[in-house]
Image (tube, rainbow, N blue to C red; front, side):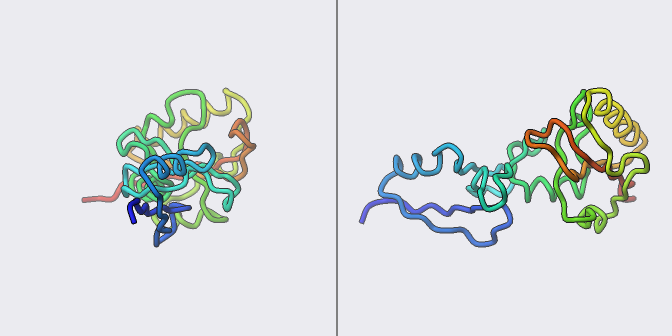
Length: 173
């Protein structure tokens, strides 16, 4: 029987793919590019993952990273827990990048990140507040620290909410 099989992941953390059979390349393309349920290729792990999934509240499951490209949240999380966010994420007047972690930000804490005093559960609703946050993050980066943003509670669309800045010293070689 002609057709193709595609290995699809509904979330970046899914260990085993769901194998789907399609009668043709056109059917596979129509299914994986159908609007809200688009499946995108991760430049990091080279898996085809659902871009937004209703099972997690329609949370976008990809991030654009200046060095890695278009990556799934699992690859993005691995990168920022090891190396912090790129400097470019903090240049400007908006909070860019960052991640929702488990309650208490356990994932970054396990990798040596600590909350930055004055920027834990920091409320951002204006350009001025975002610039203050970003300026402090850039100062830490300029002093050799790795920095990331942990989202705490954010409004739909990310226009305002609470974030926590976390930083750690780079590993000594």
